[in-house]
Length: 83
Image (cartoon, rainbow, N blue to C red; front, side):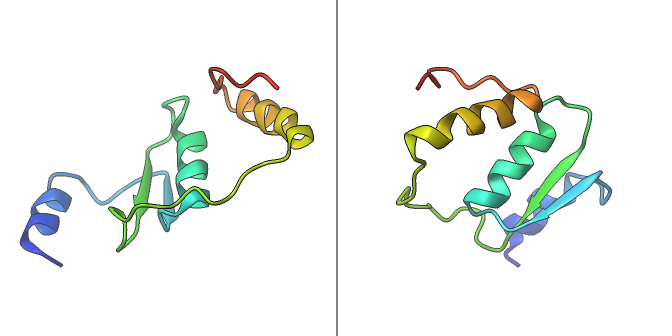
């Protein structure tokens, strides 16, 4: 680990409610959903946390309603999510 990552990590305690391993699209999405209400302490751990992900994936129009409903069930309203 670099000095900067050690300093960054030392600012926080070592306990959390949920530890998500991996900061890819799926890991970030689940961490976002679990932490949306603010009642869970969610930590994302990844050695490539700063890596950019190319959005080369999508969702079919008929699947989008299910995506919106799933986010709503976690208390997250997606702005502009009309289909």
